[in-house]
Length: 454
Image 1 (cartoon, one colour):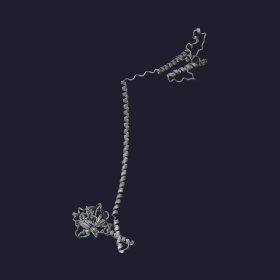
Image 2: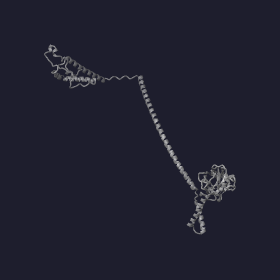
Image 3: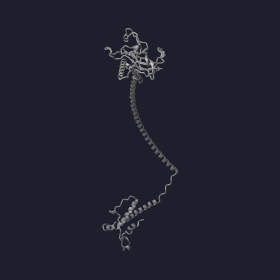
Image 4: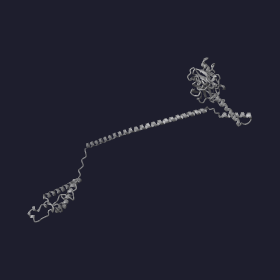
């Protein structure tokens, strides 16, 4: 249905027919003819249509605009152009009316569809719903499976990375611990060496014969009594100096004679004596050893007498082993023993640099036993039950010829007998030479101290 404005503006097809073609009855009345120009005006180009609705609306607007401007344009063109044929004008108007009608119909259809939506589709049957649900579940399971596999791959990669980092950390920790262990062991070795040095220093300090307080007080009382009884006056400084000088001179003489500055309770000149020994070695007459060892009957007392390093002044026992038992000059608390052999190198003579003719006869391994003998002349089987080990040592030829060994058994009582068991020498199977044996210690403070009990 055409709009009123368009119907008023557009003349009907009958009005557009020229008057000449009408019947003669209508000739006396003339009307103006309105010609429609359907061509687009240059000053107002038609915009492009983007949809069917826009096309219909545009066509209607164009028709209205053409109708409004039609008379003016007809008047302008009437004077300058020849009018179009009427059939063309009729055809143009009909086409425009048809386009406008199509646009209106399309708009009405859209309005009907919007106001009357289509009914909803019927719900699917139960079987189809179950199939769709099963398909969705299967799709979800497949998605979960893919996600699980991806997570497993990532976890395996993370595990490998963690294992690698843990292995590297473990190796670094092991290397650090090993370094710390080596450092600690080195520190412990140094500490052990220092402890050994300290122990040696303490042992050397213990071996020094310091005067005890009781002994000094006793000595001082005796000294004051002796001086007071002789002069009847008090002790003065000059008397103390004279006594000190006398004591020092005696100690110097003792050290010069003994060589180590320690009291020897086995020395023959002080009362010690050899009471038993293994079978002595007797060299053949006229032999080299007979001249060296002095010939005649060997004297075992040589082992407890100063030899002053003179070669041959020793007691030789037969074979590579032997024993010696010595009666001490008094009962003592033993502290150490000393074994002396001839020196390796000396200037004893210009033609003999190596004094020891055969140093393989020197004792090597030795065990020392001690006991207190209350019954003089007791048999060996009788005092064997009383013996206790005092020390065990090895004489080293590369060290000093006079070597002292401490008693290693603690808490020993008083002894007056000692036994040296030489189990080997430095290579000689013929004899073993013993130059000097010494026993060191101190006498008990109380005279009534009991003897050592095994």
